Length: 211
Image 1 (cartoon, helix red, strand yellow):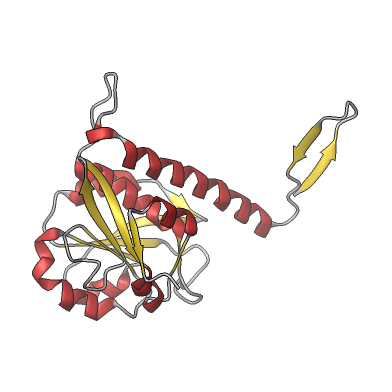
Image 2: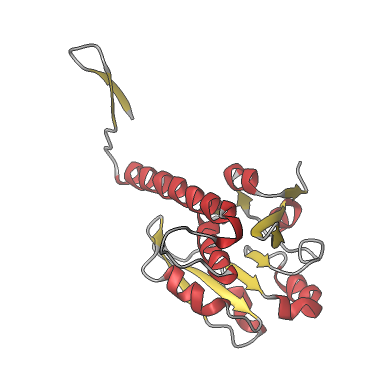
């Protein structure tokens, strides 16, 4: 980045990108800013009310859009992806109305040159194929089994039932004053070798496991 002075003395901010790597970093920066704004809007929308003639978002539409944007604030360790353009795969475990909204949310979306895709989950062998794993409330009794299986793998685990974070999940959706909110377990993130952006932490209702 360079700063130039205009003849009249006004500062003119000029982004002079000279390498492909710099272009990628700049694009990723603006994608993250947009994603953070989207999460903030979703979390602060009272009871899902959108105003005007725009239909209100359902709880699962809000969760799907938040989940999509969470991918922009997690950093996976080197070697997680086979190629620079390998997709970020999101999987869903358990019966929920979540998947349809998630498919619409990720359609055509990319981050940092990676497509966001849905990983079909047929069984436990598919959990490790994901970079993000959403575990629905229907699987509450299986939280220990599922999380024990993936806890040391670089997977961002997200759940929606009470106790998910205490069982070792990384992000736990909650409902507060009629709004979708979330809590974060940084100790679980470190065990999974993931780094969570401080920007996302600032939007969480509670963060445990801080250094």
